[in-house]
Amino acid sequence: MSYVVGALFRFSQYAGLKTHSQKMFNLIKTSSSLGTCIQTFLRCKGFCFSDHDICHPLETIPGKLYLVQIASQLNGVIDNSHSICIYNGKIYDYNHTVPLSLTTENIDFCCVGTDWKFSHVSRVSSFIPGTKMKKLLDLML
Image (tube, rainbow, N blue to C red; front, side, top):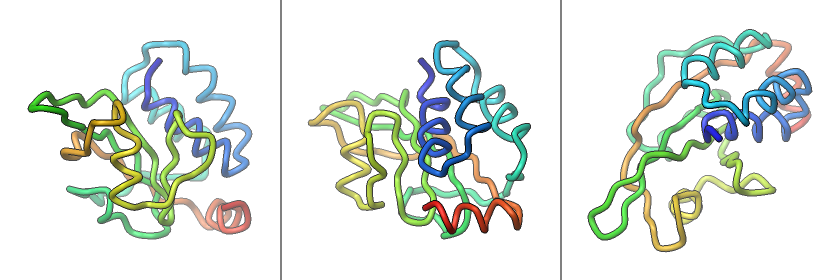
């Protein structure tokens, strides 16, 4: 399973975006590339790309959706196989049943295992919701 798809699925699920959620769910069992996952998400409408890049998840700007591939480390070993979504100070992680507050501790909690700690951002894509989508997200989240 691609954690990129999982992060987009979890965000869409909590936001009540049924079309987005269903499309992402259909991709979960595939080995779709990052680009395919993003294009599928964008084809559902309501979001467009943003050029805002971040070096740390705590640098996110409210009102933008971030898909962040996080690298975690343990004893000098780095793993960057996990992704999370961040929107308005909340983390949406496929492995957690509720959104988490955007804190250093919760970013570490999203890493590969309990002893792993966040190391750096490997890749990030950011999206801006359109006017209608923003209103919907404000109501749902």
